[in-house]
Image 1: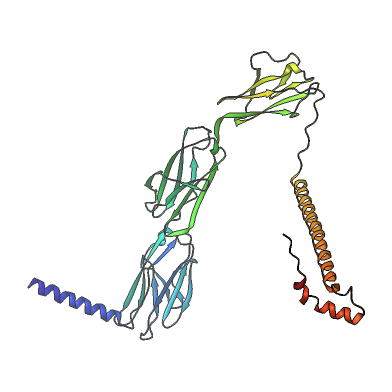
Image 2: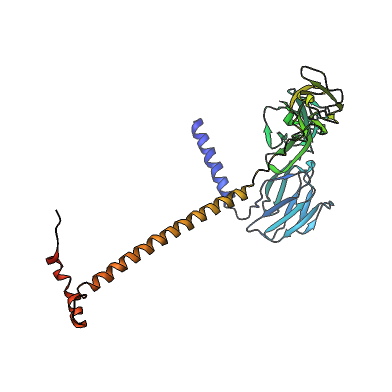
Length: 398
């Protein structure tokens, strides 16, 4: 009996639903989602009715518009379109208090209504980053915090180091004082190296349903690291009697502020003077040769680098200039052209000798048999027929 009753109730509900679906005098609306500060459009349509006007009411059941007539004095609410079959209004600068169920009604017999649920999203405020104010040490774990409030639902927070997204942040959420929005806090930790000095760390917040409302804040971090250094000789190939400067170029954070010069297995030359990162020899001697050491230091540590100084004779020639690539290319091309010209010349000589030899043979065969002829006619006959009788005059030598 209970099963039969359930089936009857389901059938009745299905019938009523179909009646409403096919009821042409039933108003039609749709649910809307809008961010705070945005613009809400409420549209209500009906296909057929008995010349009755459509009406929009807010969640507090206050009439907003009845046909073309404004009922509530709120300049944010404007009429978009009003006709026999449609009433569309807009609400600008939407606030969280505008969220709720709005009603479109048509006063027929009976009164027919349609409801539209309006969801107002809280746009998160621009995030703030904390913890970057102090410098981090090389190979230390940096810890940064990012917070944002006013989001509804709770916003998502992402971290970036340069273009690379950082993973593993810990996020917590708390409700704001209005009871509708949320404050989100995210903490990220990561190891830093000298390559991270001056890199930009970015915190981005947004809502999945409102990608275009993403907001971000960025700050550069400082990383302290021990220096690196190298020594350069000026000039590069010093000769006896020259003025020489050994320059110790060091890089670090903070900038190295202490330099110490030493000479391996001995003291610095008496005439050598050093001023910070430079060691100067006013007049270079052969005895100044050897290995020199520069120690560059900052608060993070000391870096040691060496340079072996070789002093050339005063008459040592300047290094020959290295031929340029273009000069080498021209020399190669010139050699190839010369070889080709020589081969062509040899070919012409061989070809000329060949032509001359074959031309003489032709003339000799042509005149054969004409020497003993008594007259010209006989000579021609003997020349033409001399080839045929040549076999009779063959001689054999053993």
